Image (cartoon, rainbow, N blue to C red):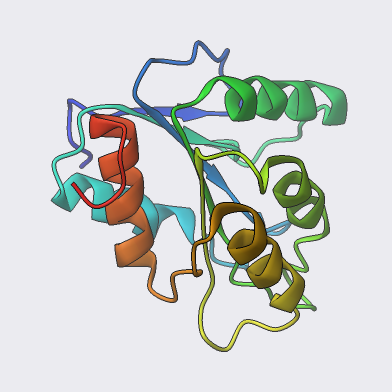
Length: 161
């Protein structure tokens, strides 16, 4: 059961972005047999007692989606949120993160952007370089640390409160 003070916005519902919102950007499973990383991210925020909105670019019920509706929904969330979290547990067979690469390129200079990936996640060197080059930050290798930074940024407006 999720924290009642946390509002989770899934992409199969209309999106109204709240002031202290966190967008969970990164690869999305395309089939039900691939596990999403986002429930763990939400669990970390719940443990931190986050009292804001979490924008999840996944459908709550896995029913079909209209591509243009989905990307428009995501565009609104990415442009209006308080923090953009890019967690990139790239798997070239099941979650190649091609769209994530483009989105990261759009937002890699935005101070709202936070980025991390597991230590063994392949083909992320360029994202690592962009993050260091434009925001002078190192990628987080632990989801819990990344989500703590997101909590701080969305709640207090700074990282490492």
